Image (cartoon, rainbow, N blue to C red; front, side, top):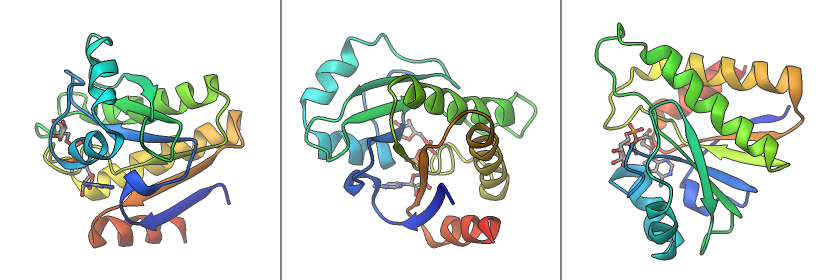
Length: 165
Ligand code: AR6
């Protein structure tokens, strides 16, 4: 099974790339974004400053610097505003565009956090469906990449584990 679910800190992953749940500025923030910037070191912010931000649902990549992962793929999930503002499509795009970058870079493995389910408030159950379905479809049609869903909290972990059964 190329999809794996684990609980832990994504900054510790030894995959070829880890995905950052960033904001449109790409200049850092709290949550997983803050943890990745702290772990990668200050050169990450220097490179991010050259990227001119990132639109919601899009993705851009940088080097991994002090991380074990070679690359960081920065994507911006939607802020949940009730569900009528294209949030579901934008979350699917965030996953898909990250996977496309990994494919362009010819990566064998990638680790995702649970994008938008922290301060951006996306309902976790819906987010799991979208994440899982987007990755599954991508892997079926185009790729043999290993994909990890790295869950930080127990609720997301059990939602993902139930989805995989
Ligand atoms: N490893 C894996 N997952 C983590 C980690 C970690 N070290 N730390 C937190 N999470 P959030 P968002 C989980 O809020 O909702 C930032 O300020 C967390 O439990 O980090 O997409 C950005 O700059 C949750 O399940 O991201 C943006 O402004 C998931 O990561 C904004 O937050 C996402 O939570 C993005 O909000």
